[in-house]
Amino acid sequence: MKKEWLVALSLVAGLSGSLLVAQPMTSHAATTALSDTVAPRVKVTSTKKKVKPSKKEVIDIVLKSRNSSALSKYSYATVNPKSAAYHQYLTPSAFGKKYGQSTKTLTTIKAYLKKHHLSYKVYGGNLVIRATGTVNNINKAFGVTLVKVKVKGKTYQTHTQKAKLPSSFKGKINAVLGLSSYGKYKTNLTTTAHATKGQLNVNQTTQPQKFANAYHLDKLYEKGLTGKGQRIAILSFANFHPADAAYYWKQEGIPAAKRNITRYNIDGGASWTGYNETTLDVEQAGAVAPDAALDVYLAPQTDTGMINALATIIGKNNASQLTTSWGQSEGALLSAMSQGAETSAYAKAFNTLFQQAAVQGISTFAATGDNGAYDSILDNAGRYRTDKTVDFPANSAYVTALGGTTLPFSASYTDGGNKVKVEVKSERAWGSDYLYGRFDKSYYSNYQDRLDDYFAGGGGGFSRLNKTTPAFQRALIGNGVNTYAAVNLWQVSNGALNRTRSTTYTTGTGTGRNVPDLSFNADPNTGYDLYMSSAKTVGKSPKWYVSGGTSVVSPQVAAANAVMNSGRSSRIGYWNPQIYRLAQTKQSPFTPLTAKVNNTNLYYTGQPGKLYNQATGLGTADFETLFNQLK
Image 1 (tube, helix red, strand yellow):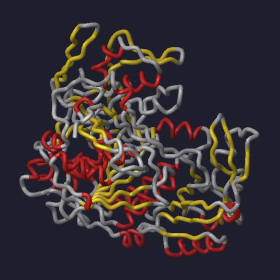
Image 2 (tube, rainbow, N blue to C red):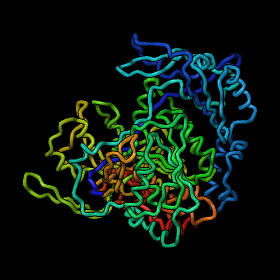
Image 3 (tube, one colour):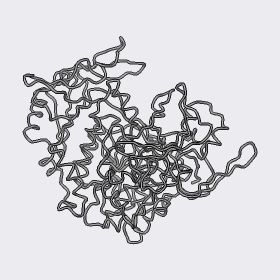
Image 4 (cartoon, rainbow, N blue to C red):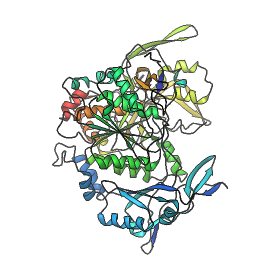
């Protein structure tokens, strides 16, 4: 069939939510209050209506791990060849006995839920309890009244009192999720309509095999490694057509099959909003690891949806690699926290689950976002946020954060009858700044399109939620970590964000979790094919696109991990301590992108002579070398 070639910038999808954290209490208290979410801190208009008592809700109680210090040490020990615990990965049952909450605690909480007529499920590892029941019973169990409110034009569910639980639960709970629906996961995939100004006629293949060829994964194919016997867990929040993926692989000459795909619906499954994201994830994962099983977990765009999907994947423990291309800017999360819609335990709750995955030997990957250093730029409709921030959950130390690059190319466009040449001579950080000359002379009918063009690039920077620089990165302090080089392309004056008149460079220091860890081709101008038909109706209005974004990179690298795992006797496991250790060796499998000029993610750029920078992390990987060194 004839292909319709368009450029679709595949932006990482967003999420937010509301959670509660146990507060200190006096010893004589019969119940302990949990910190308030939205309602007690945000002024509510007169629009307030009680939620129907018979409505069914899902609530997650995310528990704290026991022996957290020992757990952190063990996660590193499992991937340290010098440790007796090297590759001694735990099963979910063993994890639960050693680091999850005790049977006594679980029994107490389950009895309390049963007393209030709430059904429950404890996921493998004893960290998450899923409770379901009517609003009437949830109100009684948590001492709240669930209501629908309208604040600043936004309608959502929250509660009118501080939630409470028995004082015997003190110190056992990280967070309670689901009482508020202030935020949801949402897709931020751009449409092809406003990618046109950034589209170039690049004379370069767009087949997915380009990834394997560019980063020497094809050398492992030559050894017969194709992901056979491996399972890739894909966590997503939108449905998709398996038949689209099967057609895509057939047309691209890839020996993957529809039978490789299994869909799992979590909490009722997902909607079709953002189905291009899931389609892309499945097609790219299958293209890179054609013989791997693809387990696609489809959840509602809610906090409980994500927690329950993660807990299911980790509890099953049959996939050695997990990928998600959905996320949320820390800027949005921090803003929600300041308004009382979130608390800092949001990151802690998820970090605990990712830590469980690490000690079970599951390698977890996430996209870093597609707005460069300005991950919050698109958060507010009609307005923009100028703070430099990173993306969740890529900001977790237990997740391998994957940024973006642009492959070398040469192209041109016409400007007023004159042909203007655009050239990227060597692989660089992905940032749309190489097209700013074109954008500056373009007319934009709306502000959103302008932001989408100017602020396209791989996410990176310093985490403000995970404030401690992880141990694996501290070894590179003085070698790029916690220092940065940057190019000033934008300035804020009187609340407006404007282009700087001249390019200037700066250096500085930062703290916290540095993002990303590695980067691979994500620029839509050097991107990959994507095929999909219309939502809900397979085969209707099928189209071919060229996709880009760090959303592409995460499933590709997870699939590359599956290819490597298919040639091993044990799981690769937790990537981060291993790759930072290998980066310091003479035969490092990584190529740092250190150039100062033409190597920016719209702010951060290369640090000459250093192994790390916040535009591309440790750089790109040679998978053949990485495989050999990990063995």
